[in-house]
Length: 340
Image (cartoon, rainbow, N blue to C red; front, side, top):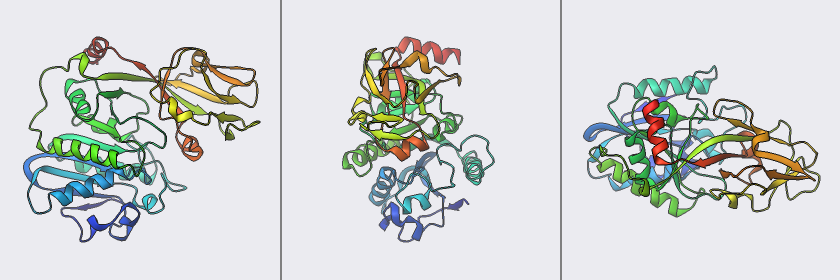
């Protein structure tokens, strides 16, 4: 499935995400030489409806069209087929950001081919560019608490999220090779997300090394994802809908990155039992630690901060309802890194 190129195909930069399938046969890796040999790896369109990454690449490559790149680039343009239909992934496809561990699907074999190519390169850093379907600030995600990972993330945003689950994501695989980061750039189509991520990519192209010193605690807000919240199978989702198995608040996504006290309303249940389940980093179910049902209302049992809440019911079923986070003090983060 993987196409590997050493130059940009004719007409590529004139295509928007929905048109890429007319120029590219499928998932494509493109290597471009620059003044610095160490390679900046950028992946886009792992989810076909998250178009900001492609718009960033179009802008950066057009800017450098008539001049040498400051640093060598390797670009992975992912789910071109899903992008043609404006969908996260197509029916029957594995999620392109859940294939970066061993698996038996054709998409897993694609990921193995990409990683085999990347293993031959002198990698400087890796960037995976995404959008959210709900309201979230721009933030950066990392999978290691090493100083160079934190410096890379802080270059994009002072809001940084550390997680180790899900562990099948591209940034986790790339963390074995170089500092890696996932950029969450707001909703698709927002020009602010494209501008912000483009400025970040340009900064990485010109960055010679990562600072050796640790970041001061005042420089960023660090959060740790402690649980993933999913709906039980075959749960009917409504939006303020009486009788739905699980009913979302009409403005549910406004709770993202909001510290909710215990006792906060988190939706409605159509039965006395919870329609959702929470799983911690070790894969243990911890639902009762975070939620309870009282007279049809789903209530938080402990202070939580959700991220990636969305009103898009298809995405909730395909992926998850949200993640739950806690603030991670810098001293604790440094100790975790030392213990790794």
